[in-house]
Length: 145
Image (cartoon, rainbow, N blue to C red; front, top):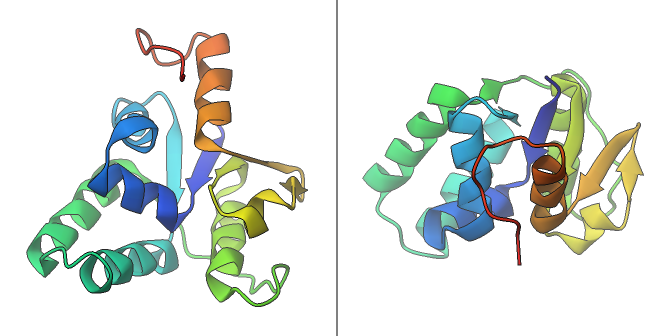
């Protein structure tokens, strides 16, 4: 099973709003997909949740621990500078390379504009979930609208 790397915005959306981003986490928790994360992605998720959305640190720490309970934790060995002006976008690429991910799931236009990176597909969450459903992965999940 190839890994999928989700950017921090996907994790933040899963925590705050649920929906398709949370569906991705639930698929990973159930073992239908292998979600790859790095400390940089988890740290950025925590930073935004606490500073921008005022989520209590305890809730953020619990969310992080839950993710670490089912995700593939990787430590990137390569520093990339493919996306100019946004270091966090480069951390996403580094995680995907380190995890040998098949797909990066993102809503960030800088990352999405790459289309692919080193043969790693870059997709929006709805496109990724639709592809899983088309392959019969995930059981009874409804197609994204």
